[in-house]
Length: 388
Ligand SMILES: Cc1ncc(COP(=O)(O)O)c(C=O)c1O
Image (cartoon, rainbow, N blue to C red; front, side, top):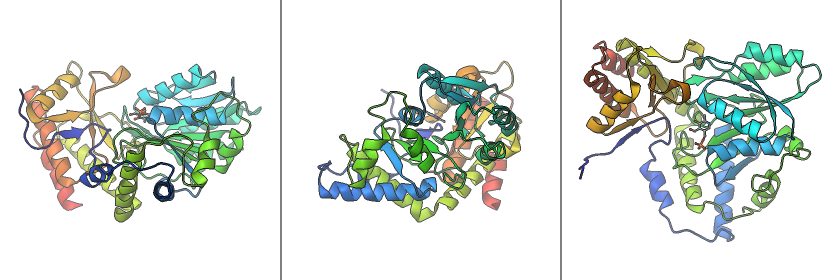
């Protein structure tokens, strides 16, 4: 039997550490989801979500993972054979593309090198050339969790506007909402997709669609088959404080508590906290003499850092040592990045000393793996934390 003392360090880029306050809130007895107390909870949660997405329009909550929320965004707004523009930013963008194809959409997938975000220039060229407006939706993963690269959504919006193109803008914020600056309404996003298990500090199990009036309008004529994911009955039931099916009651208790915590801190402070921890992490990576995978300084992720190892080094061997010796989980390399990178999650319920402990574990793991690292990584990060 392995005896573990202290808390496991869950430093993958989601699911993230769930605060004790949220765990305690979820431990309440399950209540009647058709009773008055539940209606009050629903209204509190649905109102509390709006400032986090920065929207005045409705947010639809599903008992699902983020993948379900991806599907909901597509099936509510599009019809068989519709053309959608997607960008190959990494593993999750590729999975969303695969889903769109399997639903019968015609996908134009702009190739990428997994070190950059969606190209606003490519978007501008393709949308300007699409004079017949065959493209019905543009899909962007805001924070590509497999690479730690943020796509510049406002610049994609600007490309749509400059081309006078009416396509919907669908944005995945699964690993950026409540971590990295985001404005559903001001950025002209039509559907924002997210999940509960990252910046929202909950266990996995809730999926979300924030929807614009234009997206709701599109849902009236969209013909992809949908039933469970259909926004209309959910929005109808939500108006009275209910859901058309049994909701994930205890996760909603947790959501109410997590939203209260985010409101207490202030969402802008939450973004600033993440940006500061990300900068300290990059200082550590530079100090170790290693490279951050993200190749554009404008696109560094606030919620995770993917660390690229020199050729011939196995990133999973480092992760294994860190797990076995220091009881810390780091994110593995996904898809074509398998074995080449490990990912440090620094999002959600997190503070300076959590980061210091995390980076100390990574530094010791690198040393034990025999990877020649500069000695200054941890010191550089601590310096950043001390002085900012
Ligand atoms: C950016 C992004 N999109 C979508 C997903 C899929 O979400 P889920 O695993 O909750 O279905 C993830 C999961 O990590 C993700 O990071």
